[in-house]
Image (cartoon, rainbow, N blue to C red; front, side, top):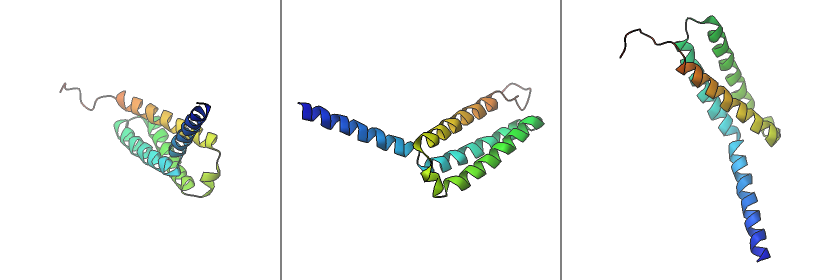
Length: 113
């Protein structure tokens, strides 16, 4: 019975390690950067009249370009899993904030649809 529990625990640890590896794979960061770039581009179109938001969107676009360049380099894999996990959480938070700003944007017309 003890052997069974040990095997099950090792299986659980292996599955967790694989899940973590999938979450911090450089390809995931490339996809997230592309997604954030698309959202920032769309959000900047919605907030064209706000220069501060336009500057923020431009900064996000530049940072996503930089992230793509970094994620494609072999040195990115050498970052600790903890740092890559923190970066992933930060990207998710940025995406959520951009989506919220898009929802809060003023309607393009005053006519009800």
